[in-house]
Amino acid sequence: MSQVTARVLNSGMRLPPLPTIRELVKLYKLQAMKQLSQNFLMDERLTDKIVKSAGRIDPRDIVLEVGPGPGGITRSILRRQPQRLILVEKDRRFGETLQLLRECASPLDMQVDIYYDDILRFNIEQHIPDTTQRIHLIGNLPFSISTRLLINWYADLAARRGAFRRNDTCMTLTFQKEVAERICAPVGSEQRCRLSVMSQIWTEPVMKFIIPGKAFVPKPQVDVGVVKLIPLKQPKTQLPFSLVERVVRHIFSMRQKYCRRGYGTLLPPDSREETTQTLFQRADVRDTLRSFELSVPQCLRLADAYAEYIKEHPEVEAYDYRGPKNPDVSGAAAASS
Image (cartoon, rainbow, N blue to C red; front, side):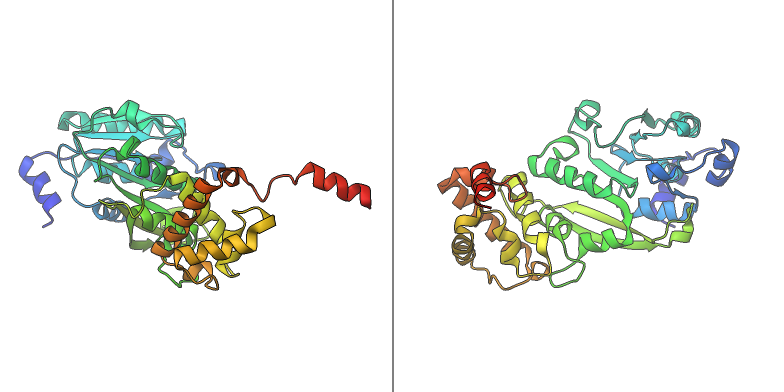
């Protein structure tokens, strides 16, 4: 018998009998909306497994679930009896099923708050002003926002704000299998990318298990990976998040070429080759490696070298190699032609 089951049985408290998620979806005529990247997970054994992957949830903990939909994962969370469950759902069509779960949880002294909002704009500090309770972030994420949300949360983690004012806020989230593999990809893996490095600077990502696409309704064209992201007690850098993200993004912008090519686009073209070589020497990184062959420490040494360089040459920080060219130069070229 699991500790969770034992706790529920010993307390004498359990959720009352409820219709299955499949029955509720049929009863309320809830169809997944493609434009919101919705896919319903009907199998309670799988939703229980997702919540189990989050680790221990204590009776004083707060759980924030992203995109509960009809409430499959929500039920599994309620069985773990957190003190408070916050549901952030953009689609109001799920209001009746979520209200039903809130009513069932009320006699068990569990507070369930439902917010119809976009998680990308949701102000966690406003709704959880106190930092005395541990927060768990759990969700079957819409594929369309998963990477953007994760980068936003890494920025919060680096700044110790939002859900990450404490250093023990773990994320247990679903992603397309390919994205999940990228998050966890080691050095040298073909899947290694910007998201791999950013994830591994601030967290320890762990692939928990894979859910076959056929378990969802409607069935997506890909399988789904469940990843737990555990914040590092000591982040691997103290550099500003925006600077690190910029450097890593440039490094991986030309992932099949030598890493100096992408990194060099941080710098104006007039002295790019020479300066790039100098910064690689400062960072003690071989410039003929490809981006996916770089370790996290090597990426961070390149970020340190760039940070030092823009202190010496602050005008370079505003350089954007994709931006408009110097109008004087382009005008002179037009006149000569």
